[in-house]
Amino acid sequence: MSISLDEVRHVANLARLQLSETELLSFQGQLNSLLGHFEDIQNLDVSGVAPKPHAVAMQNVFARDIAHQPLPREEALRNSADTKAGLFIVPTIIEE
Image 1 (cartoon, rainbow, N blue to C red):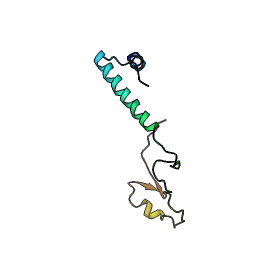
Image 2 (cartoon, rainbow, N blue to C red; image 1 turned 45 degrees about the horizontal axis):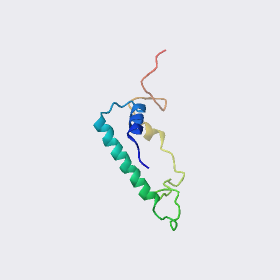
Image 3 (cartoon, rainbow, N blue to C red; image 1 turned 90 degrees about the vertical axis):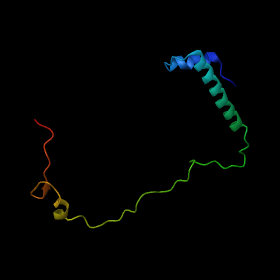
Image 4 (cartoon, rainbow, N blue to C red; image 1 turned 180 degrees about the vertical axis):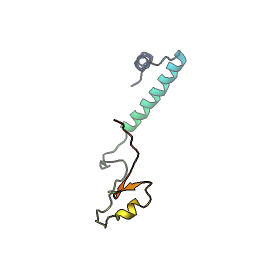
């Protein structure tokens, strides 16, 4: 299968590309070369290859869910710029 110059023109028009004749011919050659590679891939014998769900090996990356003692309030508030009654005080960002 090959791509005609009219098909390249049509796709360029759909993509709103203004290409010169030289560019159209260049793209036609590149696309036909790409299709040739796909034909090579289709001709490969993969009957003995088992299908895989992913191209790369996948593994679980989740950490174990282990309960720990929480951070004490005083330690959490120690580096805060402003606190009141054991809470963080932050600047108002929404005015009424």
